[in-house]
Length: 134
Length: 128
Image (tube, rainbow over all chains, first blue to last red):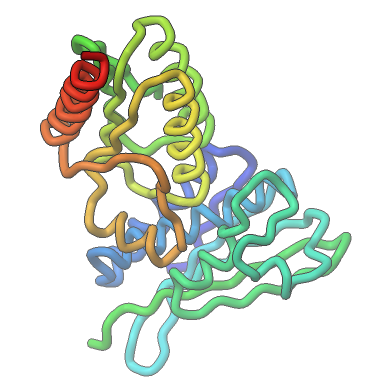
């Protein structure tokens, strides 16, 4: 599969992205509660895009490593960026009306999680959920 | 897609029928609170059996509904939280604080009725 991309510019896009993520994860044999964890993590990062950047996109890609297949999810926006990533990843920290659980929560739901952000340029979050080894 | 709200005696039942956008959740909050006032309902059951994701926004909205409804003198029971949703909620660090929960619609309605009966009995006893 080449990368699949979902444009995120409204809450309909958020819903679309989490359904796509669930569907693609199933395609590589991820099942059960992991599907819900993936959809929930996507929902959090996608909402972050709508809330802070207004628009952005989420790309999905299959990856392989250590004998397993995984789903890589990359959320990109060209919004205001995050000045203090350390604080943004703390539970309970939010600059909007959220509970501040979105990003740290998404990190807990996924296996790998990486965030790169530059003020004035945007934010990119990459996260992976690995399937079970074959 | 809006969540239908059914009136059953003193109670309201809101059954979520599929994945919900944030906008639909916010509308549910407004409609439910308005309906509790309009029908003088004593309790609300929100059925989330088919909800695909309980993320921070959904949990926050359900908590807001619980608090607002309580301010109007009614109780809320959230029913049908699936095991994988419960699992993801714990991982995310979400909880529904003061909301009552029950396994399904039937148990939720029974819980509301039992709570009402207890209150009435207590009222009778103390009020002589």
